[in-house]
Image 1 (cartoon, helix red, strand yellow):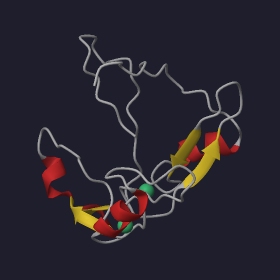
Image 2 (cartoon, helix red, strand yellow):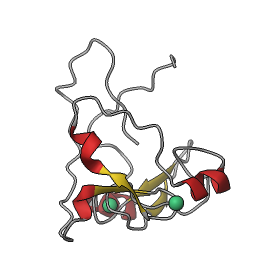
Image 3 (cartoon, protein in one colour):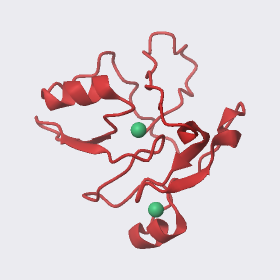
Length: 131
Ligand SMILES: [Zn+2]
Ligand SMILES: [Zn+2]
């Protein structure tokens, strides 16, 4: 999940997520359904300056999960970028959090989570109350 930094603060300190390039031919031309991993739509519109993502699942999965963006908690998810199965990690501690991470696109993060290291390398911005 990606949040845009909407506050007036410059986002310079935020470490950008580096996605590993997908080596499969043509794979980078699509985004994929979070619910089943099928190609969802062309990635063309995401190359524009202000992409608006309103749907991250195919119609069948939206019906199944009753949501446009994410499968119901506890469901297996697939990578929006490459269609591969996400690995699910549940952090330990007072506030266990479930993370769905694609080990193909985010091998470093998946690696860290496998070792039980859930601390973000940089402080994440607090979620805004508005919206
Ligand atoms: Zn689907
Ligand atoms: Zn991926």
